[in-house]
Image (tube, rainbow, N blue to C red; front, side):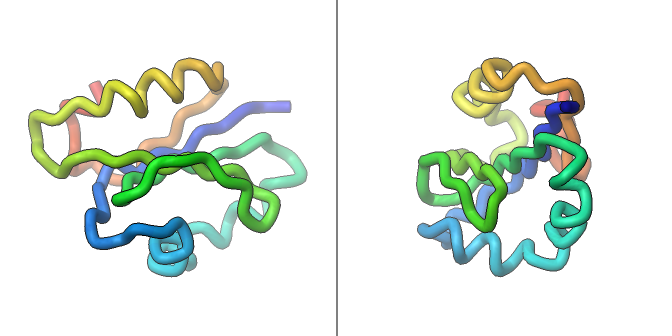
Amino acid sequence: MIKVVDVVYYYHRDYETPRQVLHKHGPALDFADFILPHLDIQFIKHINYSGVEKINGMLYAFFKSSNSFWHIPFITHSYIKKQHPDIIIIEGLRFPLQLI
């Protein structure tokens, strides 16, 4: 099965629980229900909480971060590397340095 990691670098510092950010991103995550049977997909979100949780059958990893242009989230990148994904999807282009 193809392993996919979907990353959002934007840091929602006001959100302290996974449910808060998932409620905000709900419409953007609806596609996952359709591809879940075909792909091993995992979502990476940056909020004021750290942890890995399985919610509604999908794996989410949450990391504390910063919205600074120069901030490199090494912990997030290390986690992604350990997942050995076949595909990495980066949501948005607001953080080009982190993408590079």
